[in-house]
Amino acid sequence: MMRSVGALGMVMGVGLFTAACGQAPQLEGEIAGPGLEATWDKPGTQDPNGTPKSAWHEWKGPIVEALLLPLFPGYDPLDPESEPELNPEILAMGFLDDQGGQEVFDHAFRCAVEEGFSVIHGDHEYTGRGVVADASSWAQGGLSMNVITNVLECVIAFVNDKTEGVSVLLTGPKVNDDPEEHHGFIYGEAVWCSNVTTVTSTSTGSVSVTYDVGVDVYVTEAFAMRCGLNPEAALAQRYCYKKGSCGLDYKPGHLEDYPAECVVDGDPKYGRYTCNGKPCTMTWLTDPRPPWCERGRVD
Image (cartoon, rainbow, N blue to C red; front, side, top):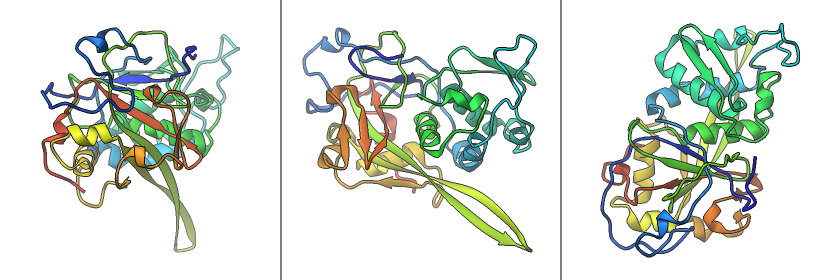
């Protein structure tokens, strides 16, 4: 579903404190002037809370493997007698036996599976929100890697140990939209572009394949000016949890310094960026200065 303005998005709660700040430039669709944010809307989809950083970094490789497999093999949505059952190969990966794994799987399910579709496993109900375009085919077949990277960006936007009280808006060429109104998302944070590296290893004649997830991040100039910390340190605090775990590739300078590398589709205030030929995902905040702007760096 898309609005006529061509903007796409999703809102997620990740936990922010409201903080006062100095004057910020009117960049990336930010609005100057008291009260204007209450009348100007950015499209989006409501969704709650965040994923702990340690959980994401433990399960980000396995979630790629899961997205390559059909979620409900043998399920026929046109057959009223057919019941969706989670793929035993995915269950064997252990997501649902671990609390952090459950949270990562739950976010991936919400990002990829069509709106309103749900399945119960154990004592938990997993419900799709249909956030990422072209990802609903995960139900019957594995996703291509270009779609998987957009699903990963959707999950990445949840990553933060502050899990209550904050809203984050996602926009992008491959982020679906709903008709809800979401005023106040006027503070552009960054554009996130995930990537996956396949790692092959051989031991005693057997070959194993794992997946390494990284993310390129382009911070907006406005966020850099508002943030109390160096913005690279701030986003590392937001996303990373210990040295060597991160895979965050911070691009020097600001998003606005890369007009040839990150091309915007339409008005920049709708945040639809394609970087190096790949559709990426942008995050927006209602708080001009989030708590990760006030803490030390974790690489």
